[in-house]
Every structure is written in structure tokens, then in C-alpha cells.
Length: 116
Image (cartoon, rainbow, N blue to C red; front, side, top):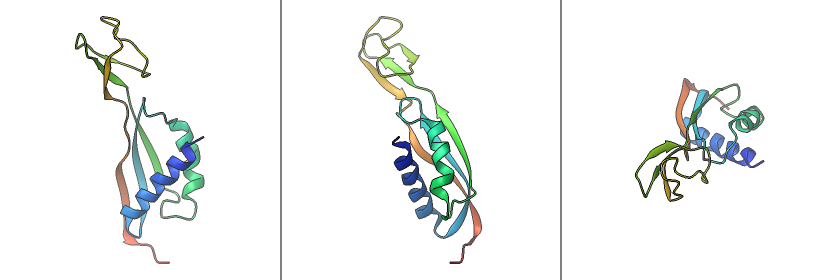
């Protein structure tokens, strides 16, 4: 379950950008082709945020569908794996247009710094 390490990395990035302010909400984008299970990130989030500026923060995950374009016939289509052939011509040379995202899109921060 590599999502624990990924979630810890997300929390580290958020804390760095929070600069001492409490994080109220985190919006993540996770693509269908990113190789990350959103439910596992949700599961790990409360454990990893305990005792940090993110403790109690709301986690919102926006799922980005996979999308590709066939190099041969230029058809664009949805894809749930890297191994889907083009539905138009059956070709396997497909470039990824969307779905590999894994990023913090937004942070909602408290206005006051947390005193330690």
C-alpha cells in the first residue's frame, strides 16, 4: 500500500505551503491512470494528519477520468488502463491526454497562525 507514503508526501507539501496556519480543507486531483487508489488515500489521511496542521481538515478528492488519443487515427477516447487499444482502429499507440494527475489543487487555510 504505497498510498501511505503518498499521503504523507501530500501532507508534507500542504504543511510547507500552510506556513504555520491550520489547514481547513485539501482538494486533491487523482487521475484514473495515476496508480493511486483514492479510497486508500482517504483511509490514510486521518492517520497521517494526526498532530499536524492538517488534523481535522476536510479532504476532497476530485477524480480525473483517463483520456487518450490514438497516434494512428487521432481518435480521442476514454481509457481506464494503459493497455486499452483505440476503439476506432484497434491501434495500441495511444498518447495520454488526461488521467495521470496526482496533485494538491487547493488548500483552504485558517487566517491565523497556530501557536506552538
